[in-house]
Amino acid sequence: MRVTVKYFASLKQMAGKEEDHFNVDEGTTLEQLSVLIGQSVSQLGDMVREKKVLISLNYDVVPLDTVVKDGDEIALLPPFSGGI
Image (cartoon, rainbow, N blue to C red):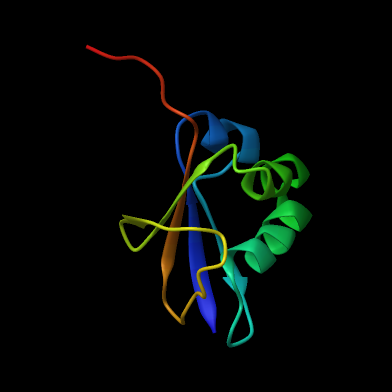
């Protein structure tokens, strides 16, 4: 199975790229995927596991125990601040 991880805003600069592609086994959770992300960009893997980034799976915000499927698109978004 293959999934795409997209990096946004400051995370894109940290990663030095807009996206990565990962081959994962069936039943892989986002938390397990964070290990692979960490092998690509170590600081990002830690940030995912420490819940310092917002994770979107196919445009829905989901928890780390969510299982990914072939072709899924995962977006990593930095924390947002601000208000009205």
